[in-house]
Length: 283
Image (cartoon, rainbow, N blue to C red; front, side, top):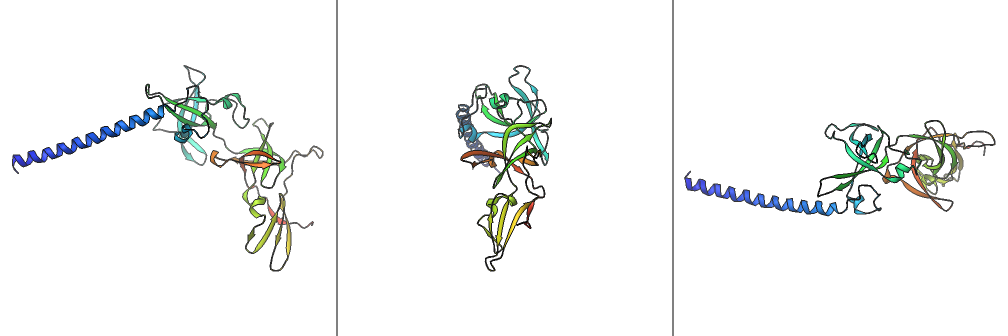
């Protein structure tokens, strides 16, 4: 190969490298522009909650972190380390991201306005943390605790609806929360699962704790009830009320139901504790 051919080939390679470099600079400029645009969305470090459906929520990232303690520089903030899942409901420190991050808390967590949440963030607590953005001028990143990571809880049964149960959460000291919670029944025990439906040729009419099964062909019907029945707190008989075990619903699956013309938020799902539909021999 002649020196001229080598020089020509080298010139083509150099031209290609310059094209790639120009393209990369364009990418860098677009990335910087995006970061500057996003920086405008960064909330104040005091972490006032962003308006629902705002770009903050649309672009944010939420992850699980473990609180390691108060920020020694400013005790209105906390330090936390990112977690990674190790199994069903268990977490450990992420070995690839060991540096603590500085997190703020939403006022409702600090003030304890929602008894579902801890009235304060404590050392060792697992929490959901939202990344709220970056200050492009300083490189500082902002994080906010949006909710604690909760496990199953026990409730003292107060009321029974068509699809939901109502009860008071039993606290760690055995006392009961003053706030009434709404809990989804297990799917098989909800009235809406059966009422007005036909499965396997059998038609169902269903209420909160009883249903009628009919064979449309023969006209034979059977009355059924939930066994064992739900027993609510009764001061006359001195019965304290059944204990219902429930798991928290993820934020995206929480919903509201209308009960006596009021919108009630359902945050929990009752575990199936052996109750089932059985023929009502007393009817």
